Each structure stands twice: as structure tokens, then as C-alpha cells.
Image (cartoon, rainbow, N blue to C red; front, side):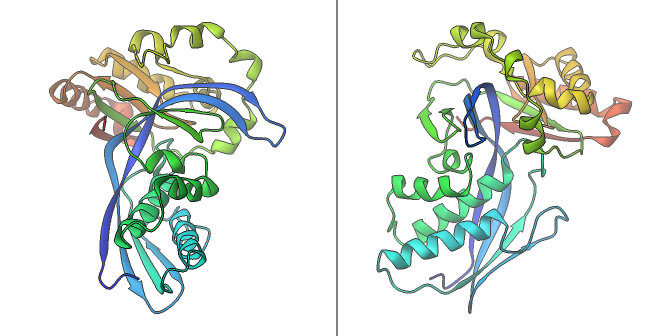
Amino acid sequence: MITKPLCVQAPAKINLFLHVTGRRPDGFHELVSLMCPVALYDTLTLTPANQDIHVICGHPDVPEDASNLAARAARLFMEAAISESFPSVSGLTIHIDKKIPVGAGLGGGSSDAAAVLTALNCHRARPLSTPALMELAGRLGADVPFFIPGGAALASGIGDRLEPFPHLASWTALLVYPNVAVSTAWVYKNLNLRLTKDEKKLSNFHFDGRFFNIDKHLVNDLEAVTQTVLPVVGEIKRLLLANGAAGAMMTGSGSTVFGLFTNAERATLSQEALCCSPQSQDWTLFMADLLV
């Protein structure tokens, strides 16, 4: 299947808008979200092996067994390849150089899985169409299909219905991770939908016009939930805004908070200012352009 090591990058993502619209009988939540990849990457090296799929990662919170999303992605692709009567496949070792924080709302695990699917498909001269690849991705998790085509997108449903969002401005993001992981399942479990059904949020967001305005649309319904157990989210937002961010918000279910800047120079000045803050000694900061 692979005759020599194959190296691929998996970008992080941020949610520029996240509105939860309801909860389905199966327990999944319906939402509307504007998602955008950013230039912060995990690096995955895929190496041929005699049999089975193995994961190697030095991060203590990343599983190295069959539960790892990247391993599950490789397994799914191999099964799909066999079912399509392609030549038999061999084993694989996946080495993950983890740069995207875990439990941070940045989609690192989902991106790793999508990167494996895309890399294996490209290496095999694209035996699976993009819709077929995205169908496989959807079996792994609601966020995984977003990373297949790349670029900003509007996500709806449980995050599985995607529309390209091509007219997003080229912002630079300063990502601040307070080095505390957050359980996405816990956040959604504790979300009070009655407090998030603010129709003004949606009416102000011009989906059809493909227009994003930081002042009107930088909304995340999950932020208030996460702040109940992690008040530092609010403190980071305050510092980002006080140091020049055009807007600041938590991404996903947290715990990472991002500030948006018109250029890298302003983001750098803000990063330097935050690094001088006593609170930031326990935080990890990343500067990353939006991949629009």
C-alpha cells in the first residue's frame, strides 16, 4: 500500500460562529457554525508495516491503541479499499507529532483522521471520490468531514452538512490555550438550550450573502457553559481585546480562546503583551493565519 514513509500535515480549526439550535432524540445536537482551518499543524508520518495499524505519539493524552481516530481512519480506508476490489493492503504505522493541544476545541483529533484518509486516498491515485471519502469521515465524527476539502465552511445539522464559505477575510489569529482540557461531552450535557435560542443571533448572520462581521457574528453558545468551570476563558478574552484584537472568542467547547487581528504584526504585539502578563505563565500561545 505504502512503500516509503508519507508525511502529511493536519491543521487545527476555529469556530467563528457556533449556535446550537436543538437536541435530537439520539442525543446529538443540531447546530450552525462557521468553521475555518488555521495554520497550526499536527504532522503525521505514515510508514508501511507488515500487518495491523499502530499509532506512536509522545503526547500522554493521545491514545496509541485502536481507539485513536487516525488509526480508525486508516482501518476504514483499508476496509473500503478492499470492498472496492482494489489490491490488498498491508499494515501501517502512524507517527503523530502533536502540536495541536488536546481537549482544546481546535479539532486536532478530527483533523488527524481526515489527514490519514486524504493521504491514503491520494497515495492510491484517488480510488475513492470526495463524497465517498467524506462519507467515511462522517463515520468517525461530526467534525472530520470538514477537514477533507479544506477552507472555511458553514456547518449545519450535527456539523455534517457543509457549504464552502469563500469570502472570509484573511485574519491572523492569536490562540491562547490555558493548558486545561475540556470534555466536549460534558459541555453539551450542561448546555441549557433555553438560554441559547436567541433568534437575533441567527437573523444577524447573513448566511446567504456569505458575509462575516466580527462585531455581529462572533458568537459561541458553548462559551458560557465552559466559563462556569473555567473562568479563565473570560480573562483571556479580556486581555486579547485590551491588547488590540478586533474580536475574541472561545472556539468549540473550549478551552482555547482566540483573538482576531488584521495582520501578523498586530498579533505579534499582542502576543508579546500577553506573555508579559503574570497569568500567562500557565498558558500556551500560538499565532496562526486563517486558511481561507
